[in-house]
Image (tube, rainbow, N blue to C red):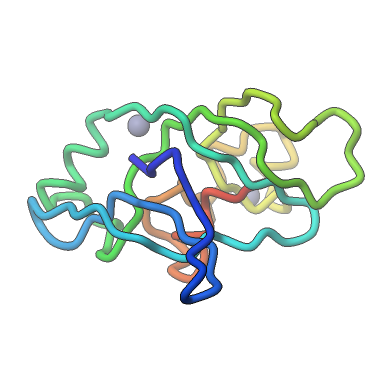
Length: 141
Ligand SMILES: [Zn+2]
Ligand SMILES: [Zn+2]
């Protein structure tokens, strides 16, 4: 539910994107937000399509225990690689991708056993977890 189009706002000299922001129970507004800046080993995905699943409905109804407003909605995302800050050769700008919305620590026992969905520090794109990273979650490893 993040809009597909971002553009340069000449007046503010900011790259802005449109996003469906969960503001409160049953209140979602399309707003302009600052385009996320990616860090090393991350790629920025220009969203083309998103799914709406039961979790999104729970968030919308204000029933999800970890989703706190304001929150860029949606975690089932497909799109196009827009920017890359990595030396990886297996990813190219313009490539079509689907994201894995799990954000695991990579250091705990379940993660090291290739079970990141069991990570005790598990976060999901656009749901709860590290507040500072929520909006930036559309940039991911
Ligand atoms: Zn889902
Ligand atoms: Zn972990």
